[in-house]
Image (cartoon, rainbow, N blue to C red; front, top):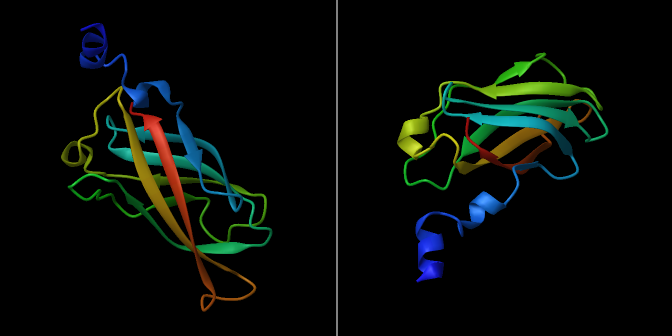
Length: 138
């Protein structure tokens, strides 16, 4: 009965015990991040660890929800070639937070696919990088 009560009130909910995290592998370092239901946006501050200048050709956020996550086009600051070691802010505005079931103060996971290419090699040599944000919604 005690275990059932703890589960019912969310005390045993594993996602509450896990820390917020942002990971993209060694190519990109995640400095800071936020998933906001209040402003219907996803924000990330990322550092280029690829070792050379790259151009981002696309960034796509997705969730495991039955309803697909839809956001506006990613806004990059500053815009242009991403030099090695540089830190950039990326924002996905206008996301459909209600439709995918985002709840303030609950944890949610967003997958981000980054498509990029080396400035030196050109767009014919593209690469994909999959990352993950797991955060408490604000």
